[in-house]
Image (cartoon, rainbow, N blue to C red):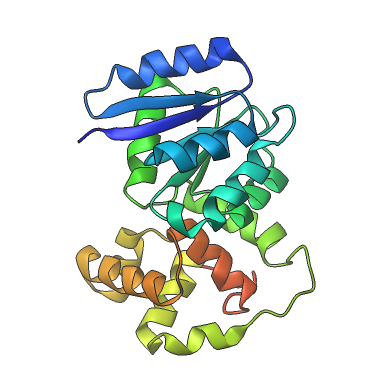
Length: 225
């Protein structure tokens, strides 16, 4: 079955261009288009796409609000959100991740890059480079926007090895880099990370990073070096 994608952008010309590109891939099909965030939420609940690609700035309900609604809906747990925007700032990236987005890319991305991004997001991986992750969490995720409790008790379900894996993921290391450091196979690392995600009820690696900082497991002073 091809990956089912919903496009949300207020510019019909851009939606058309992205649709043509995505539909050109044998393993991807566009199942719907939305002109604003509210329509994106409505169509996501109706169509249940694998991936929602959304802009940030749209009239009415913007992409970040729509992302938060989609990711908070338990019936849409299988749907991933990819932010595709011209506004590539650390603050927007942080807000997108807090809202539950699985990735964040600019509209200047090349055609093959967008296709690969959809596949990456659908596979449950995060679309942020390790360097971007380290910079981002140090500046924003380590200092939550609200003073709400961190709920460190969420971490009690993790084994010591799983906690270690979450810390390394949150500091920006890939599974291969973690495997090299821990002298384990990438398959074993992936298994540990997936179990940690399941125990913490994290949708994907992006949310796992957010949880690590929000619970205080990682503070932003750690370094993967």
